[in-house]
Image (cartoon, rainbow, N blue to C red; front, side, top):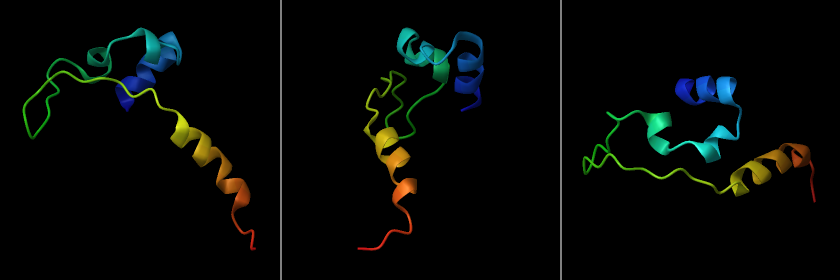
Length: 62
């Protein structure tokens, strides 16, 4: 997360779409199970939309 924060601080949040996953993870990052070092970034934002709506509904009862 610190690497992502550093990149976002320097290049902005659009860098998530502009840079390769390796730039966020580093070349030495590998899967513990299979040893693969090739990763793809997630582009699904549904969880962000869900999380942003949940707090506004807390405490409501039917």
